[in-house]
Length: 475
Ligand code: ADP
Ligand code: MG
Image 1 (cartoon, rainbow, N blue to C red):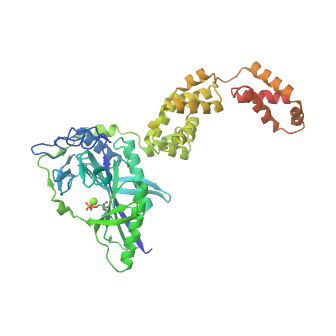
Image 2: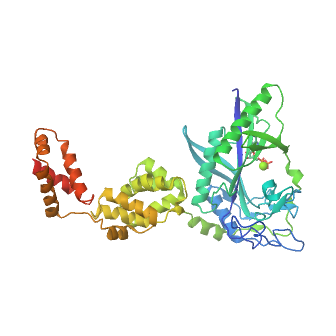
Image 3: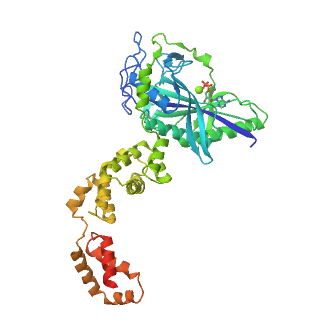
């Protein structure tokens, strides 16, 4: 291909508040249609918006986490358009004076690190949703205002992204940071994180950017890269035919795996932006910003560094544990209970993550502390590593704590030397020919004897002790 793709992303992230941006109505997902509304969300005449200050704090956190300049004065603007899910006829948004500008996010590509510049972050309210699904509504269309007025930040990049992979990597990194910051739950299926992708191509080496199309409302990492990939090839075909790319808004059809034209692109003037006369400028005290700055949580990059340097984990382990904020928190709870980072890291990666198979950690019925206790029981020789695997299965199934399980099932390790020795003697008497073979050089038979002892003791004998005693007796 003789073209270079240029991509800029606009990501809408739902702020993790209990109530809406300008109304007391709830933001709980999955409520029955129109249960989460109020006069304000419905655009009734005579009502006035009241700003949710928690939403503002979350937006500031997002801005600081993305290395932006937070502006002490920003402005609310009305963005007008006509649509049934927008009863006021305008969205309250920010336009030429957003809350934050000029940030960046570092992403890790196979080819190395890359910095994606962030142009601006502005706050706005979400619109409602038209429901056209005939299975639900018959021949009618209904409107659900539950999302109307939900607080969002829109995070807009510079056109710094140059491939579908870079776009999806950026999306993943952004979601990760927003989840670490507790700003957005990142749940793409529930619409908490959505992306519009602006895509253009230009002949390689040309400075001037080509005409872009805007792909709307993409709600998965896979769709981001598929939609952009499709669009790059489509535009290349248009240019190769000697035609021009039309500036327009397109939709990704994930069934047909293609983008479709939705409408010609609106320009800012189509929206008749003007400052919202119902709302004063948003003024942030320096004190409030620095308060939020001092309470910023540790972000993934710093965490990975601490895990490798202070906890001496491998890069790989640190990376896997830090991928998701909940997993890192679980791991830290476990090592606070019992200081054995390396073993606990292995348990989290090989056992916990495998057991939950991509489900959220909250699905587990035991805590990080419980895992810490389990590993402490191995380390203080109460149970063997093998028995620990069984205890772990039981924890998964019932949520019981490990000490309880060990106690009630009588799983405590057998460490009494005399007791083990008498079991060994018994086994040796029963297997004289294997002793001869062992002495004749077939040392692999040690495993046979260990196995017999473990069987006799239902796996409870201390394996190290069994090995030592057997070797002594056989030599
Ligand atoms: P609008 O508000 O109309 O969506 P903006 O100028 O704010 O337009 O740009 C929105 C996004 O489009 C930004 O992420 C920007 O980086 C990106 N963008 C702008 N021009 C181009 C282009 N020619 N090709 C690809 N992306 C572009
Ligand atoms: Mg746009």
